[in-house]
Image 1 (cartoon, helix red, strand yellow):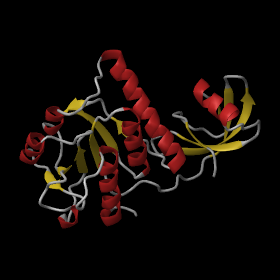
Image 2 (tube, helix red, strand yellow; image 1 turned 30 degrees about the horizontal axis):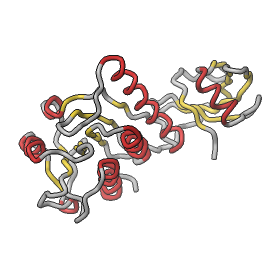
Image 3 (tube, one colour; image 1 turned 180 degrees about the vertical axis):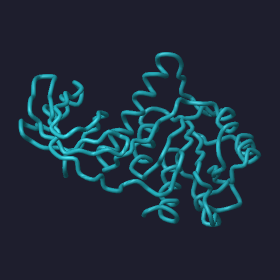
Length: 240
């Protein structure tokens, strides 16, 4: 598998670009790339380039742009936003990673009634940076050239006041996902944290215009539910 690296720069043929220290460390110490090894870089906005490693140090590296190929089409025709109740630790990371691999367009973390994660001030900023890096790493691995944005967290009420129609996952909903014939565009998917959304929150979402759906007869964990619906939506209306 070719080495891919997120490098948000303007790509000009033969230009030499220094890498951030973390990226340099990853390429030279973790992947053990050497001088003259080649890799693919992408800018997160659809731009792609082939590059050659021309200089390495303990915490530094430089690449030279050697080709500007046409970027392959790896983005889904289905525009999706995953509005995810914030879950604890690795569960949230797993959700962001897999949603990115599945082609999600945007991720909106939400504070809902059952969210147990406390994030304020600097801690919130650092967590948002961490989540965005999880998404970037998933794009490097999966071949995506557009990096989904992880938006600053909102309360459920704030999000419902500004959202577009979509689906809310409720294991007790009368309507199965299979009954949805045509997806809203863009497709917003609301998923609760551990413990799910409260019945009152589901009602609030439905009053705001979301359609409550269930995914089969089983109750899915928070880190499974949104990704399962994304996969189902990609299969029916996207590029699976």
